[in-house]
Amino acid sequence: MARKNKQARLETISGGYGAIPWTVLDSVSFKGASDKAKALLFALMRQHSGNNNGRLHLAKKWLYNQGWTCDENNRKARNELIERGLIVQTKWGGLNMGADLFALTWHEISNYVSLDISAKSYSRGAYTLCNLIPTPRRKPPMAKKKMLPNDRASASPTTEPVKQSTGTTTELVKPLLSTFTGTTTENNVFIPLHTVNSVKRIVGVKGKSGISKQSLQT
Image (cartoon, rainbow, N blue to C red; front, side, top):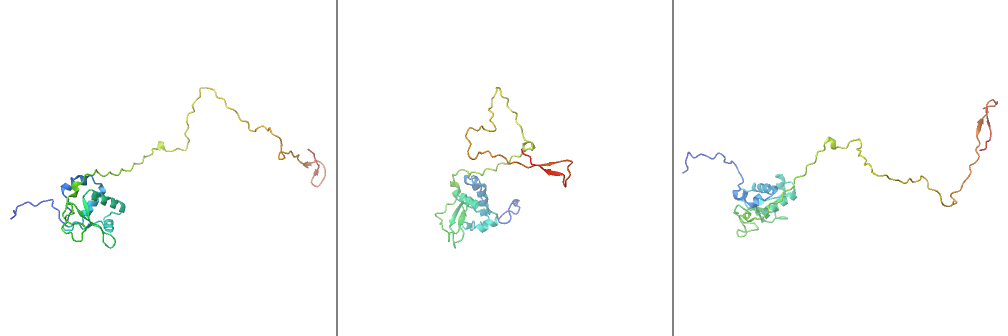
C-alpha cells in the first residue's frame, strides 16, 4: 500500500504525450539527423497512442494539416528517418491500398495483422546500429551588402587623373579629304549652271510697281 504522505510529482503531464527515451536523443542516429527529419519524427510521434505502433502514417493530407506543405522536403525527411533507423516502414500502400505505414523503432509492435512485416523481421532499436555521418546542414543565405551613401552612383561623372608621359609622342594627322589619283568616269562630269534672271529695282522710274526686269548674265 502506497504511503498517504508520499509527495506527488509537481512536473507531471496531464493528458496525452509522446515519450522518447534518452537513449534515442543521445544516439548518433538522432543527433546527426537534420532539423526537418527531427521535426517530422516528433510529428509522427503525435499519432502514437500506446498500442498502434506500426500503423503510423505520413499521408499527404495529414501532413498538410500539420503545416508540412512541401512534398519534396517531406519525402527527404522521411527517407532520412528510415536510413538512420529511427522509423521503419511496416506496410507499403498504393492505389486502393491506403497510405504507407511506419513504426517507431524504440517501441514494440503489439499487432502485426495486415502488416507487411513480422515479429522476426522487425528490428527494434535499429537506431542504435546507425553509423552515418551527420546530415549536411543547409548553408544560410548570404546577407546582402548594404550600400553606403558614398558607394551609390552619383550624377556627376568621376574623373581620373591623367598620367603624364615622360617622352614626346608624334601623331600622324589624317587629311579630311583624300587626294584624287584616278581618272574621271561618266559619273564625274562637270555640268555648267544655267543663266539666272535676276530682278533689279530702279529708283525714280515711273511705273506701276517701280520694278523693271533686266536680264543679268553672270
